[in-house]
Amino acid sequence: MIVTQRKKIPWHWAILMVMPAFGNTFVETMSNVALPYTIKKYNSIPVLITFLGSLSILFSIVVSPYVAWKSDRIWTRFGRRKPFLMVGWFGLAFSLLFVPNAPNLVLLAMCIASFQFFWDLTFLGPYEPLLNEVVPVQQRGRASTIRMGFANLAMLIFSLVLFKKFDHEQVHFTFGRYGALTLPIRGEELIYWFGAASVFIFGLYFLFGVKETPVPAKEPATFSFKNFFGGMFADRQSMKIYLLVFASVALNMSLAQLAPLMITEQFHYTKATFGNISGILIIAKLICVLPIGLLLADRFDRLTLFGFGIACSTIHPLMYWIYIHFFAPAGIPPVKAILIIDGFGALADLIGNISIQPLFFDFVPRHRYGSVYAGVIFVRGLVKMAVVNGVGAWVTIHARIFHLPKKEWDYSSGLLYIFLVGLLACAGVIYFARERRRGRIIEHARIEQPQAPENESAVATLAQ
Image (cartoon, rainbow, N blue to C red; front, side, top):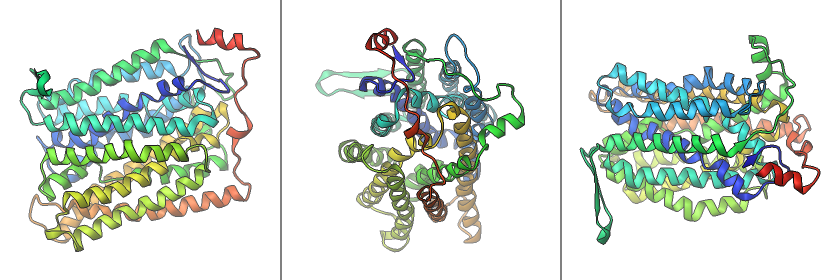
């Protein structure tokens, strides 16, 4: 049984706690890559595709912050974070079952809204505070790197195995001389149902395998806008933390739902080729890049690593756009060039992400994890809603300005928009680093380590 509030934990606890990253990343990848093709059955306008795909961001502004805030202020016999996780994960699994068979755009939009509501209720709500209550500060960097390993495994399975089957009316797998397997479902159904199954399994494990230790509530429990927003924006340090939130959005920003369309429609590669490109990059990350992350995590200053990652990540889209428009034959990059350029971007994102996941909580007192993380979610949602829909609007307006033929889009123009957002993020990180250097930002995680039980028998009792 995994329990919270330990000074040091066994590494298998940390591994089990970060495993839900597999389900989270699979759903996110599915939403970014498969969902646009599901939507395109009824609509092909970029700005509408990105809007439907970003409904999750809307819920992350409204739902997720309240749930994270409230999870600091309640206690039930199941804990304070777990009840929200159970409702969210089981609701997400149920909602995903209906997405591939929606008969029209209206019902599809309702299915998308449902699964993204429950997705935000969990992964963008109480999951992060619970994870950081289990994993102590000195183990968080390596746990974050292991977490990225599970995330990349989810993307690998999606890209090399499942996405290639998207258009198949019957799913067929061959296992060499060991035989073959045919499933009586469509490839599109397999993708969404696999995501539902993975989330359901993690929900079951957390229900029976994780136990929360009570923490006295030090914040007002009654909801009011004053208590809610006061908890999120109570002090100047919280406001400065939200600069890192903006930078983290910029770090992970991409063409979102337009990225697969750029590969398949603008560059005219097949879905299988897109899956192979993604799969090769993920294998490279698992074999080469993640070991680098394990070497760097918890050994170097997190903010410095994050700053280096965001700087490289800002350069990446500019490099990509310049190559497409000035060096690529007929404006279509060869597969090898895409792998090299995106490989550089993957390394930059990894360096930044192994730092940013635990970095937020380094500057937050334990009793305010939920409240400040609610602010993180709220600000992240506002920023993502603006920048993700900004990509779709940028590509749509670009096509009108340059009079591109109807239904032909230069998706790569969105790379310039991503570069400009990255420049703003770099400025925010530089300011935050200067404030910490001047002693205006306190690292609470280094001050208030979890209290260990008085004797080993107490640990053994809790772990049973």
